[in-house]
Image (cartoon, rainbow, N blue to C red):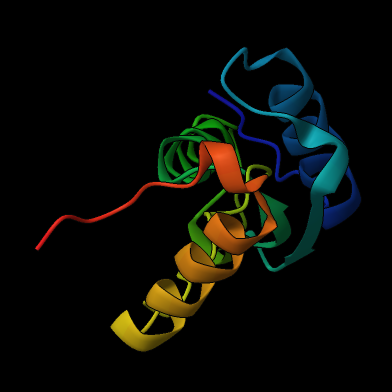
Length: 112
């Protein structure tokens, strides 16, 4: 039985095709480099599951001996920023200024 060794260019082309056909992977942001059968994946993906799916896709290709995962997970939906808590004094000033902007007949009165 005769075995043929695939060139790095053939392995790279096949890995790129495998990434295109893998449903869990958006291949647009992924770069592929190959040297002596070792595949280096680089770029950005949207989730850790996509990162793992890309690595597995590369490993499925005949001629790949190892995968170096240089992918960065960068979510499209950015997390909500954490806002500082308002101080009680600032809240009280706001409430007072809102109350003072109402007509006299609509203001709340306290009976002490």
